[in-house]
Image (cartoon, rainbow, N blue to C red; front, side, top):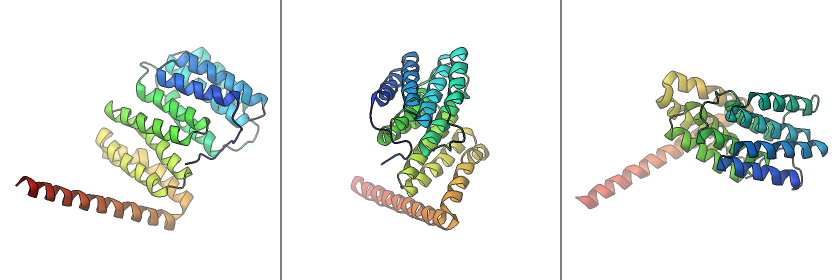
Amino acid sequence: MTVTGSAAAPGPADALVVEARRLLEAGSLAEAADALDRASVLHEQAGDHDRAVACLHLAAATSRLIGDPAALAVRERRADAAAAPDAPGSSLSALVRRHTSVVTGATPVVVGRAPTALLAVAAAAEAGDAEGAAAAAGAARTEALASRDPIAYLASSLALAQLAELAGARVEAYGTLATAWVTLGDLVGVDSGRASVEPALLAMQARWGATEFAAVKAVHDERRRAARSAAQVHDARREGDDA
């Protein structure tokens, strides 16, 4: 599974991002933000503006979680200054910005495990570790569901869907959003659940085209039907064994 985006050779900046991810997962947010700051400087010195900006957005999101508005403002200004003029965002940059924007838009009252796991998703994506990003996104989704946090659940689901799409696993990408639609309906109501996920599905349909989208949906639905049938057969056999 490969994340598309900036493809810099492994070096000191990458090591700092990996270290930041470890610190985020350990809850050492201030230290993680410092590591991301240093990584952004190295990326900028190398002329890799996209990755420099991504690191700064991650550091800014961490400042928001810590509750440090001064550091947040400084990092946001640095990110704006580091952005290459008229440079289109890469898939990797878009992934990082999507998840950090969810966290930076939240009120930093309590640093929960789901928000820090979302930052770990972005850190892993920035390091080019697609498997690590997917694992972190899955952990964030599980934690968000356990804490009944619909915002973090949506963000982690979007992460998983985009990672699957970038890897070419369209059925899995669609299925992740379909599951999110149903689950968010349970968490916040049917109408709000639909309103949360439908834009992402419509954007997916626009990217793939209506014909391809319908074909992917059909494969997904058939797999669901087959899984339900297999479960019913299994249950019937178990009941027969218990009789």
